[in-house]
Amino acid sequence: MNDPRGLAPEGWHVSTKKEWETLIAYLGGGAIASAKLRATSGWESFTGSKNGTNESGFTALPGGYLNSLGGYFRGKGLEASFWTADEYNSSEAWEQALDNYDHDHPIYTSFIYKKFGQSVRCVKD
Image 1 (cartoon, helix red, strand yellow):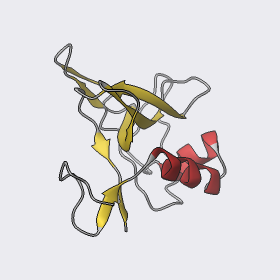
Image 2 (image 1 turned 90 degrees about the vertical axis):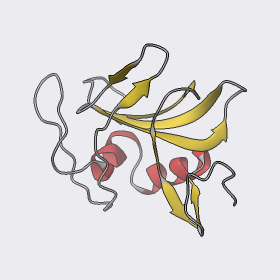
Image 3 (image 1 turned 120 degrees about the horizontal axis):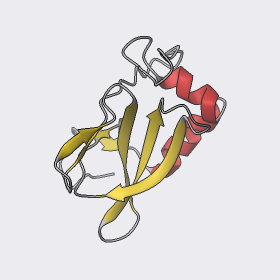
């Protein structure tokens, strides 16, 4: 895969929606995968610390994301949002997010405006 945006170094690519789905399934799905992907420190929640086990070695940190429409950062300490390589439509792309907002979806796939700022997960070719 070639990344025309230059987000991934040579020999790597930005992960696809399907690659995220495969990883989540491999790690046990939903809430189980979320804990295995999250770092063992740095995660907050509205009801106390919700650090992960990092059993996967991924060490996801809750950097949040930039809402460029409103000009502010959201979710620092509570959410790790990652772009996928897949477009949803001309103005939005698929994302994969892990969060600690104390609801039933600690890991989810959604779409978000391309104007927003998020992390990327690179996968070796």
